[in-house]
Image 1 (spheres, rainbow, N blue to C red):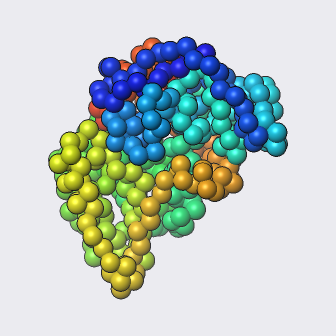
Image 2 (cartoon, rainbow, N blue to C red):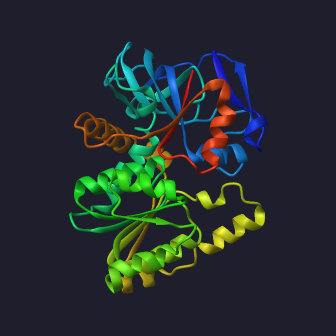
Length: 338
């Protein structure tokens, strides 16, 4: 089979090679998927740059999100069968014509559902669902700040917050993205490049603060987010995109930007900080991942969730897809087709 193999860390244009490799074997509790399309995430960018600690040693096949047909199942698999079309989160290995996944990270989808949209349902929409529904427990009227709201997870969070009846603040890095945020239901779009989001949010919420902050950026935005929280508020961290492309000094600066906190501070202010890594959830609590994915698919079928696709690339143009996502101009999911 063909696979896009990460052979060296560095820039997008010289990091991958399309190679012929052996098809993966299926073990107990696993399924083999003939891949129609795979999705890109910012973790892929960090893995390519050598900044992602979970990335396997090179040469490696990275990638989490795949859509395709089940061609083989291992013992103990009871939710899908050969011939089913599924969307799935892999434990790496997604940039290939065939990928193996844990059966609990697979969900059946309709034959006619667009593959490029389906690639958004696993890592991005499952992350958003877990963060929003299983960790934050938000209510109608709550004030929510979503950073990188035009991205894949951000779009999913906006849709969930809108359905819940929250008042939504969303940050993005261009005026065109602010137009997009308005179109998907963000009440208060903020251009973080030209505006101080802390100042802009404070103008509206006053000293009462916001109820929740979703932050995939890291660094100084975490400090500002904590300041914006009202009593009972929570900030949830699910990424550190500020480290993408940074040199060693930039990484140190981003790390220091997070700040240093004592648990007593959170207790006295009645605030909380939560960290989420869906790989860890998939590894250690696979039934939680299964529940999240099944609920995401159900909400898509009910018309409540609808992924936005930023752009679709061919596998031979993977370097271009990486550069596009890394350039931070995308709105929604970036997908790659075989």
